[in-house]
Image (cartoon, rainbow, N blue to C red; front, side):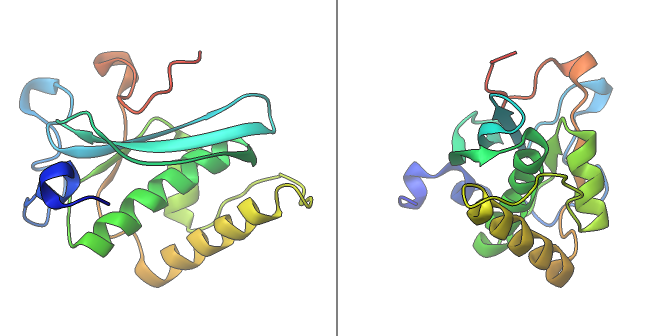
Length: 162
């Protein structure tokens, strides 16, 4: 990544956040300081990519893909990527995903994918295994919440392909 002046996530100096304090605004509004993640996939399986967006800056912090995979795998990897990046950089803020499935997989520290291994997707499945190991070794070090699409609109990391 570039220096701190060009990197909005490196500029975040929020103290360790516990519970929902600091992550959600009062009055039922959307979060004020968070990493929002989302994935997109054309087909199932098909070309998949995911990214993380920093709130409130709206800047893309990371992007991965496209690779051959599924949307659920991308959503799962995006959450773990966000957590690993924050841990690596010594930062702390909530992570939001609009995927109930991915949140369940993260909470169980296991991606329950039915994607059959092929030579084309084996590197992605290896990455899933690494993400599972990371969760087993690190737990869930940051608050993880479901994005409230009904009240807040599309998650800021959305690829806009619906």
